[in-house]
Each structure stands twice: as C-alpha cells, then as structure tokens.
Image (cartoon, rainbow, N blue to C red):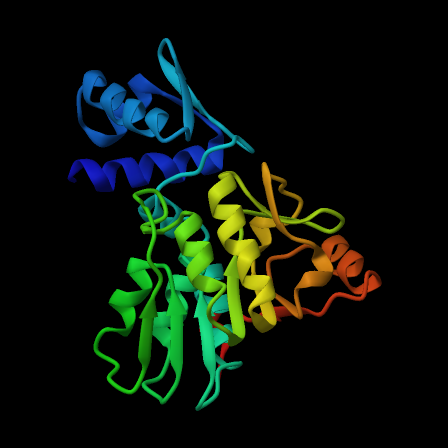
Length: 259
C-alpha cells in the first residue's frame, strides 16, 4: 500500500474511532512506527489531527478542513446518492453552477452529455465533464486552493457576480437548522455565499453527517436554499426539525436501492 492510500485508511479509522495509537497502526499496516508518525504529521499539517506522544486524535469542528482526496473518501455512498438525485434537477438548456465539494464532484460524473452550461470553480469537476462535448464549461479564475482543488479568492467572487445561473448546487461542511450552512475557511464561505445572489435556485447538498455541525464561516441561512438534498441516513429528529421550519428536504435513496 502506498503512502496516500495508507493515509486515507488512517483518516477512515480516525473518523470511526476519533483516536489512533501509533504502535497499533504500525502493526495493522505492516510498517514502522516512524512511517506512521510521518503519516500523522502530514494529517496534522492539514489541521485534521492533533498528535501526541504515541498517537493522535481527530480535530472535530476545527477551523480547517481535510484535502479533497480525504474528504472524497468519507461518506461515499451518501455522496453518490445525493449527487445522483441532484442530476435529476438538471434539464436541457439549463445554466448551472457546480460547487467544489466532493459531493458536487460526483454530479459531474453522473451528468448526461446534454446541451447545458456549467459554471464552476472546481478543477475536479472540469475533469468529469471534459469528454462531454455538448456541455459548455466556464471555469472561474482565482487563487488555487490545494485543499479544495478549486479557485477560491476575491477574484473568483468578482467573476461570479458577472454571471447568472438557473440552479446552483452548493456543498457544505456543516448544516445547522438555525444557523444554516457553514465551512471552516472564510474565503470558501464567501465564495459559496456569492452564488446565492446570481442563481434562481440554490440547492444545498449535505450528507447526514453534516447535520448539527457548525464551522467558522456561515455561507447561507436555511431559508436561502430552495431545497436541501441529503441521504436516508439522516435521523428523524433532523427531518422533523427541517419540515417544521418549512424547509424542502429531500432524502436521496442509496444507489443500490434504485430500480
């Protein structure tokens, strides 16, 4: 197993268990403790973990976020279900925005080759659309974020203000029934928030693990979103709270359950 795959596996373990022990990981992966310490050091530089003598703990709710590659490994069946459901809102002739999150990335994978215009700031989304010749693609400029693998800066926001789309598919790290959608990084939040004023409909994509999570930068109030698409793993309490607040909440079935 190469270093990247090993770190992805360690990230999965951290998400489940919240803490890891160096010696246990070394035995599990058949590598030296020094190798595991280097892996944890890489994750610590991303703000994902805090290391201590003999182990590390997951930083939950911190003002930092894991890389695109690591985020894309988390809650994968849920992300796929939500992305597939989102594509059902896209019709021939639409102009749409696809955000830089990992759930939104999967929209590009499922999207049919049809006559639409896609505005995005995500390099990863561009990759999924490159061979679909009927789709007109507009890539927003800006300072490249290696964490999000997307353009995130004031020039990105300025560029968006000169465009208009029918639907904006927006991702988030957290969603609170009262505070709204949020992400750890301020510039990411500002970029996402800028889309609300240039679209007819803003659609939030948030798997069930995002509910009840609040991060530093609020990028949309609950009522800013015409629809919130989540997965069937969401708890009944969150569903009831959303419905009582008058929010349109759609639960996307997992792909294996579709006929």
